[in-house]
Length: 74
Image 1 (cartoon, rainbow, N blue to C red):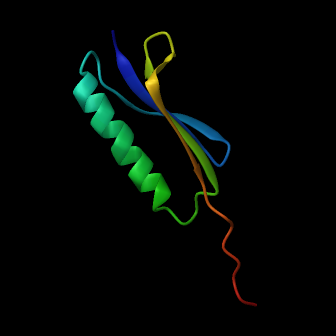
Image 2 (cartoon, helix red, strand yellow; image 1 turned 60 degrees about the vertical axis):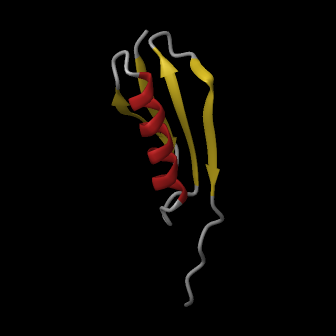
Protein backbone atom coordinates (compact mmCIF):
# COMPACT_ATOMS: atom_id res chain seq x y z
CA UNK A 1 0.00 0.00 0.00
CA UNK A 2 1.23 3.50 -0.84
CA UNK A 3 0.57 6.66 1.19
CA UNK A 4 0.31 10.39 0.51
CA UNK A 5 -0.54 13.56 2.41
CA UNK A 6 -3.13 15.76 0.72
CA UNK A 7 -4.55 19.10 1.81
CA UNK A 8 -7.10 21.79 1.05
CA UNK A 9 -6.02 25.19 2.34
CA UNK A 10 -8.33 28.18 1.90
CA UNK A 11 -10.00 26.31 -0.97
CA UNK A 12 -6.80 25.26 -2.78
CA UNK A 13 -6.16 21.51 -3.23
CA UNK A 14 -2.66 19.99 -3.32
CA UNK A 15 -0.61 16.88 -2.70
CA UNK A 16 1.88 17.68 0.05
CA UNK A 17 4.03 14.55 -0.12
CA UNK A 18 4.12 10.92 -1.22
CA UNK A 19 5.67 8.16 0.91
CA UNK A 20 5.53 4.92 -1.04
CA UNK A 21 4.91 2.13 1.47
CA UNK A 22 6.60 3.95 4.40
CA UNK A 23 3.68 4.40 6.80
CA UNK A 24 5.87 5.79 9.60
CA UNK A 25 7.18 8.59 7.36
CA UNK A 26 3.63 9.35 6.21
CA UNK A 27 2.39 9.63 9.81
CA UNK A 28 5.22 12.00 10.73
CA UNK A 29 4.59 14.12 7.62
CA UNK A 30 0.87 14.28 8.44
CA UNK A 31 1.50 15.61 11.95
CA UNK A 32 4.18 18.04 10.76
CA UNK A 33 1.84 19.45 8.09
CA UNK A 34 -0.96 19.91 10.62
CA UNK A 35 1.45 21.71 12.95
CA UNK A 36 2.52 24.07 10.18
CA UNK A 37 -1.07 24.91 9.24
CA UNK A 38 -2.20 25.39 12.84
CA UNK A 39 0.61 27.94 13.25
CA UNK A 40 0.08 29.75 9.91
CA UNK A 41 -1.75 33.07 10.46
CA UNK A 42 -2.95 33.25 6.83
CA UNK A 43 -4.82 29.90 6.99
CA UNK A 44 -8.53 30.44 7.59
CA UNK A 45 -9.67 26.87 6.84
CA UNK A 46 -7.79 23.69 5.99
CA UNK A 47 -8.16 19.93 5.87
CA UNK A 48 -5.20 17.55 5.89
CA UNK A 49 -5.51 13.84 5.16
CA UNK A 50 -3.21 10.84 5.08
CA UNK A 51 -4.59 8.72 2.24
CA UNK A 52 -3.78 5.37 0.71
CA UNK A 53 -3.37 4.66 -3.01
CA UNK A 54 -7.18 4.42 -3.39
CA UNK A 55 -7.61 7.88 -1.77
CA UNK A 56 -9.14 6.35 1.37
CA UNK A 57 -8.33 8.23 4.57
CA UNK A 58 -6.00 5.96 6.54
CA UNK A 59 -7.45 5.03 9.98
CA UNK A 60 -8.85 8.44 10.83
CA UNK A 61 -5.90 10.59 9.78
CA UNK A 62 -8.00 13.64 8.85
CA UNK A 63 -7.58 16.98 10.58
CA UNK A 64 -9.84 20.02 10.23
CA UNK A 65 -8.05 23.30 10.92
CA UNK A 66 -9.81 26.61 11.34
CA UNK A 67 -8.81 30.09 12.40
CA UNK A 68 -10.87 33.19 12.80
CA UNK A 69 -9.82 35.90 10.33
CA UNK A 70 -7.48 38.43 11.95
CA UNK A 71 -8.80 41.96 11.74
CA UNK A 72 -6.31 44.70 11.13
CA UNK A 73 -6.56 48.18 12.70
CA UNK A 74 -7.46 50.93 10.27
